[in-house]
Amino acid sequence: MTENSTGKTNLIIIVIGILFMFLLLYHVFGSTSQGIYSIAEVKNIQPIDSEDPDSNEKSFAVELAFQSGEHKGKTMVAEHFETPGSAYNLTLQPGETVLAVVEKQEDQEIVGVDEHFKSHRLMFLSALIILVIAVLAGVNGVKAMLALFFTLIIIFGVMARLLLQGWSPIPLSIICSFAIILINIVIIAGRTRKALIAGLGTLSGVILAGIFGWLAATFLRLNGYSGDESTFLQILNANIDLRGIMISGIIIGALGAVMDVAISIASSLLEISLANPAYDRQKLFASGMNIGRDIIGSMVNTLILAYTGASLTLILVFAMQKEDFPLIKIMNMEFICTEVVRSLAGLFGMVLAIPITALIASFVYSRWRFDGSVDSGCAEVE
Image 1 (cartoon, rainbow, N blue to C red):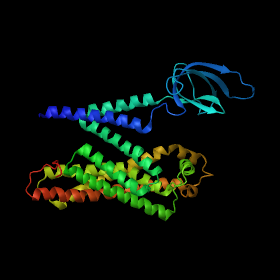
Image 2 (image 1 turned 180 degrees about the vertical axis):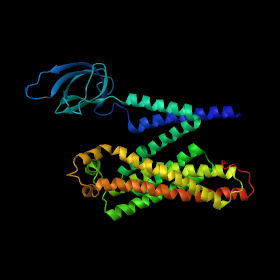
Image 3 (image 1 turned 45 degrees about the horizontal axis):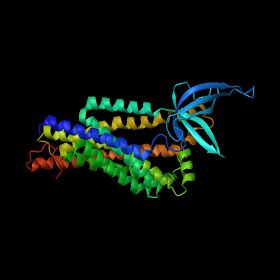
Image 4 (image 1 turned 135 degrees about the horizontal axis):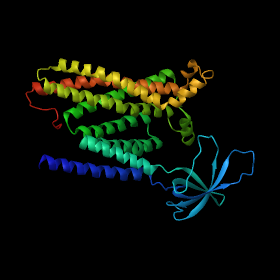
């Protein structure tokens, strides 16, 4: 089989795999018309005169043509409200598609407009990004997207369900991390020694990040209540271990950065060992550490800026109400401490993954050469 036909076969297999992942995601999360929610088109909007002349709130009668769900094919009228100047207004236009909700209360159906229907546009943007990655990165880019789909299935389809069934969060997150690492490394790098080195380095860094998170949570007496969603989750399921969930989140959150670092070190040292056959184990390890120090400088900024960007709204609130939220108050708030620990644990795992990966890579690559094998480092693991 020629190289060209092999590439085409791999591409076909990957495309089929991605289609299978879409079907699996659909099976895990269900359709867009389950329960009380349905897709509907806005046919007409008529203003309703307010009974209170002093009220700024505007009322509208919205005629909805249902396109999915139990009421598919029916036309129903929903009462919609808008408050001038409010950020929560849902401005509607005839002809647009919305997510409608129909609830039964005392033998009466209450119809409302929940959100603009965005999922079709979101899928379009996702498909566009996948296409751009496939064109620019070729088969490797499509492989990366396929690995991402498997990761989503493991987290949302497996891990989340098992947590709700009462599984212990920390061991489960380690098992799921191992599965994610295995799938991602094999799909991206294949069954090679380089992939094995990167996988071992990633797993070590993630476990160390989890240990740091557990020790920090114990030291700081964190209980896992990191926001309103934690309280809501505890109300829905009193048996949920919020501290364990928090540490599981630390482990999963550190996984991406640690994997990135480990693959970079393993790949860089492979190229160095091929370009410099005279390099022994000590020189390879020193090169790996030098590369790792440069990676740390950029990845630290990446992690911190990612968390800062996600919390920008909260930062502005604190800045506007600094009398109520002085620094001593902010640094002792539960969810702030939790986010700081999350960042520190990710940095801890990432930094320690560098010497671990460099040590394993220097040992393996130098051993092949000293054994007299002419191995590019990309041979399959036996």
